[in-house]
Length: 512
Image (cartoon, rainbow, N blue to C red; front, top):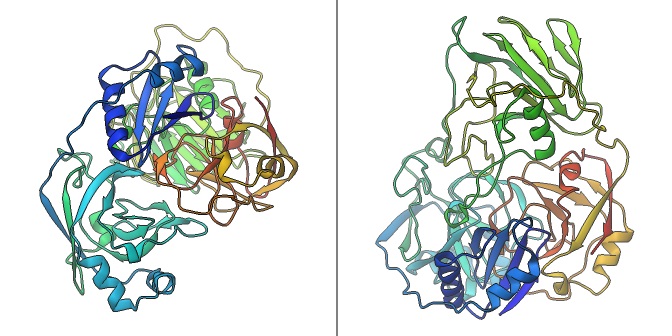
């Protein structure tokens, strides 16, 4: 057993095999150490997340090393058959990598009976074992920013199906129309550990994949006098966010929540809400709201023009909005994400203990569009805030200097990789989103070139795919993934990274 520091709030535990993963995960679940908030099983690891104000890395490491894994009987499940149309974008590439013809490749994938080993990555995603060794291929050099729901894919020794639209680095072979995840179903995941799975080759599917995986919306028709906010216009991506979901990694559910939690907390405090009340996260402005009742509002984060019925309002200062008035959020001068809080919070229903929109996982209300209606909640403190303005520095408009610590897989890279990362300047890519800030610059070379078995991820992890171009994980990061983590951003600097704009320069400073 080997324990690696993983940023300031997690440890990654290497063990010999998956049976030990199950045993250690079960032992720590039955008798959790003080301060542990989540446990994430991987193929050969257990990620242990903790609160650093309750425990510390040294104490927790000793506790983990003193834990004896228990014996866990592998679960057995029913047989699930998934119809698949084999027309994936990577068929030709997998054919080239394996030397198999297309028909031979498809037959090699469709013939075996698979077993669900473990879940992770995203809600409903299952790692299936039993893949023909001839189909053991590497992940893509760079993950796709968007993989369609129902995509059937392979990577390393596993095959799986993407439950929702989102980024992914596996090789795509085909597609199915079966919904693998439904938060309103019990159990929510169709494929659970121990289940047996077969892929049935078909020429067409009965339902449109995008329709069968569509998320539910929170919409309605506003009535004057109701305690609601109407979305008049939403040009960029605006979502409902609180401080996210915790302790649900075993379901493949990540934290989500505000990408810049510092700004979200401040917005709530300015109007007298608890820190975790739901607010709106607005990306690059372009949001117009009509209030159907009087409200107290604050705007924080990326500085932008704020107009209330044509009158300007100030950032980081609460202001009153009368019933019937509109508030317009303009494009920020620096930064990316602006936060709007309303006294009482945004009162959309909770999904799995949070009101947050998880874009990658498809949980919570979908991104806002014109005509959506948001109820005003009752999630407020008994007292008004003691301050009426907050002197907050704007996000940097020029180069960012971000502090990092060495990651759990630094040994997978060339000896000078951390020096290269620290000495170089990287540029934020246009395809950055709530999942990751994707960077372009000097490639980071590996010393170990085999595939990394999938393991737990944390916000701030700097993953490096085969291309060598780093990507820095944000709030909607995958729960598990297979690109090695070279470094981790410090907790204090993560909100700064969440405000990094495409084209902005980023450099790194290694700290202890």
